[in-house]
Length: 169
Image (cartoon, rainbow, N blue to C red; front, side, top):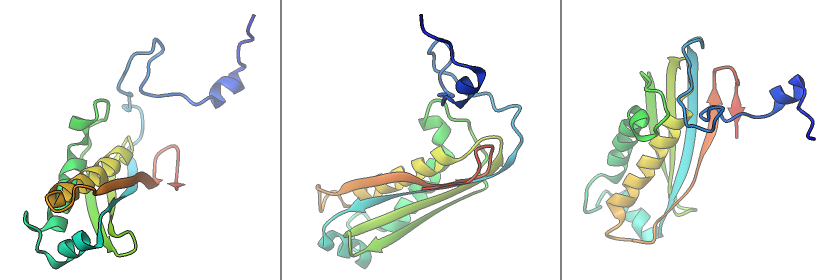
């Protein structure tokens, strides 16, 4: 017969917060959590040929301003994350920034999103969604020139605030 874990062991075991006791998906109840300032930063890369990067840099892409369009798309995506990710809470975001750096070493674009809120839950999903959609928008804007573009390395770089404290990758 298997031994039951002690209270200490049970508390130390990680728990998937969006899965109920019976295995059903559920939205986490954050109503008892205090509203605190929270920040999340995520990044990803769009890797392409040097020629395509030069086209973006020159501003001569057929569809228009690649970087400006990607920034707007990323901001819009952060604001609509709860509509895209089923169990995310809708949040009144206080700040979203999308920074895109042209990198000759990749070659390609390094996309970084920072999202801020004062609320009872974090904004990691909003930052990750913003980066993902900004990267996808860059792809969409240049796919006619280069189909082999790769989107890589989307990840959480940093989060601050809330019960779990500060995290840095």
